[in-house]
Length: 164
Image (tube, rainbow, N blue to C red; front, side, top):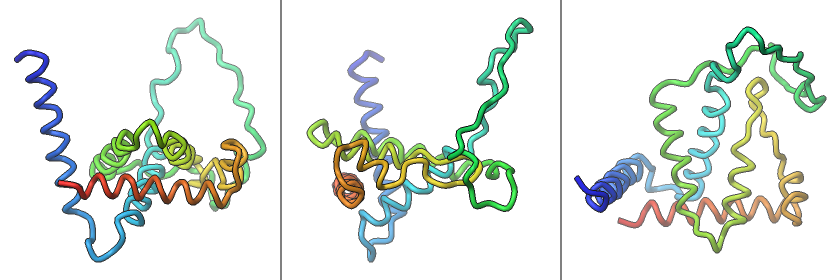
């Protein structure tokens, strides 16, 4: 199989997967709202993935104690346990939802950046690390504008998913 055949095969597989995802949506509700829900679940799933094997195992490495940011300690859960490990179905939905970010074109890069910032979730509290106000400050706009950009990004994704 040459490179062009491999690329065509990958594109066909992506379209087939996109069609399968589209069939899972409730067509009586707005696509943008459902895309936002899938992205929210993807953020929670991503935060719950185990982070094993991220440190070198050599005996000569001494890692310092972790110093937590005060914001990291501001959670509303009753215990400091991590979120439960995600199921295979959740990971599959997360992979699909994260692949949607590439559907947002370069001309709308700010929409992609806002969505990416909202995907960062604290693994213990399950809270978003970037509030709408913080996103607005980073992007040079208000929190309401950042929220609108997120909504617009979800609409762009929803339209591209719905397109056959």
